[in-house]
Image (cartoon, rainbow, N blue to C red; front, side, top):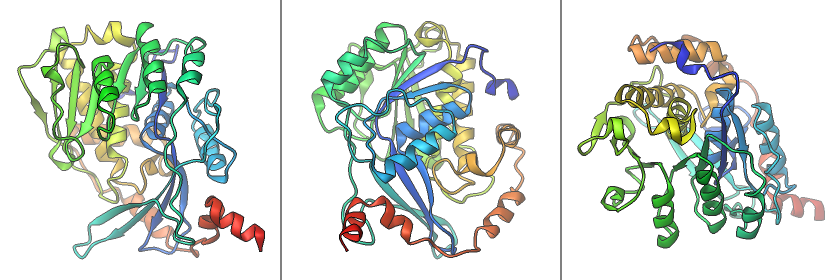
Length: 365
């Protein structure tokens, strides 16, 4: 493999996605530093990473005017994500996740997610899908993407996915659970690629269906991933396994799965479903390895997309090549950056600013 895997055609491929887009508040409990405020959520991360890799990314969402939404918009725009379809009616409050990172007794990083404001105890807003009637209307106006991504199910999300599938898009479904079985079965029948964590979904057997995904990917953390394929030229006889790449430095594993997903899409999704169905075994293996390498690389940074803020794209390419070639060296520059972040005081006002309850209480005083 070489650097050309990062290259895309002059006519940039496009991805439309709907699902969880949230504000990530990344807090290292072992250092004195202000929280990092970044756009997050599975859909948010995948679309932002692909924009970073020179795709055109279009989230379909219901951003409101709350402080968290403003911060998410600002970060998405920083990375070139197009927000034309991100403020659909009725607008909703933005989901917020606090990401606490600290080291355990063995010196290994531990990541925990919190959805409750530590200042007032209020539970942060949850995900709100695009309404079905709104989705049906905008489906008639969307440009034709190479890929459509969804990670949360609703009638509106499936309407959008079906419309894009009808125009030749690859449908990528990344479920985090099964809540409504009817919608889940529809998504499994519609999707071309289904990727999920073994820890979250252990009872999926999509290939026992008369129709279903052409490619099923099951991630297993440090144990790598398994996949099975019904793509004509690279059909498999049962599950195949690919080992995980070791991280150059382990600082935080959050977001590794999102980088893996983006890497796979980046490699196999550029030509839509027509090219995807002609994929060779070598191309499929390259895509899965690339996704795994990006996941390992991301573990060297704090937060789901922390590497995008710390190193240049040129450094990313060099380090991914080293991971793929298994020529691993400690990332000394990152160690220096980590030490530099220990200066300063945590900004407690940040948590009050993003919590609507805290802001209302403050304004009433």
